Length: 79
Image: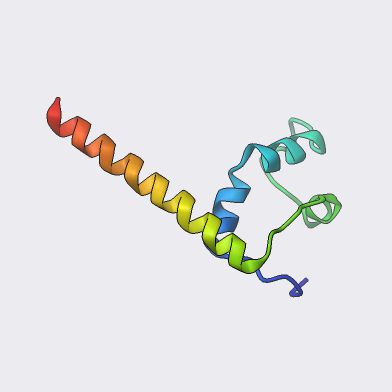
């Protein structure tokens, strides 16, 4: 609705989260699960932290993912 500022990195992690997936699954059937309608999104109750906290959360999760990828590359080189 344009009233809430959402960080793109935070939203990427949120939309892949179990919390979001569980909400989507609970309101959809097997036929519609693959796509979300605007009506479905309007019915969802989502708690969004402040923009500053979103930025912090996004940076932390992104750095964890970067570290995991680095460790995988190191392990691949050791094998």
